[in-house]
Length: 127
Image (cartoon, rainbow, N blue to C red; front, side, top):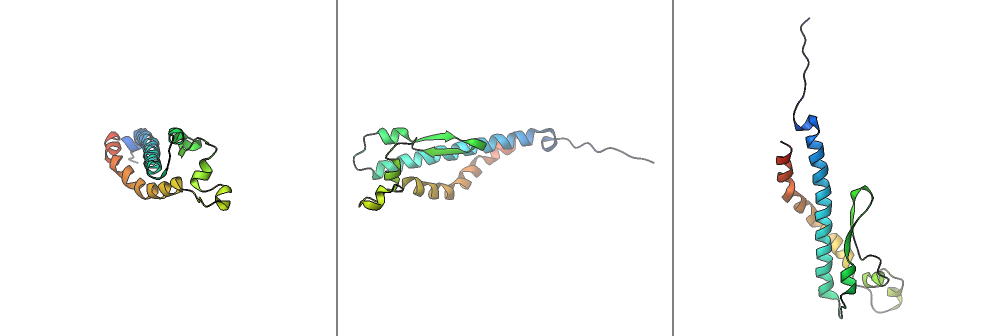
C-alpha cells in the first residue's frame, strides 16, 4: 500500500510564530502601560493646583504577575485622596481628580489601535 508522511514546516510549526507572538504580547503590554503613564502625567499636569513634583515623580510602570504592566503612583500616602477613593473624600468638598480612572478608560479605547500599529512588524518577523 502506497503511503507518505506529511511534515509541516514553517514558522507556525517550528516555534518562530509562537516566540514572535509572545514577544509582541510583552512589548504591547509595556508600550500600552508606558502610554498610560504618559497620559496620567499629562492629566496631572492639567489638574494639580500647586504641584511640588513629588507625586508626579512617583508615577511609574510596574511589572506584575503574568507579565501584566501596571501604572501606579507607587503607594504615595495621599494618592487615594487625589484619586477620590479615600474615605476622606466623602467628608470633604474635594472629591478627587479621578486621574487614573479617566486615563484607564481612555487608554482602553486606544489600546487596540496602538497594538495594531506594531502588528505588521511582528508578522514580518514570523517569516
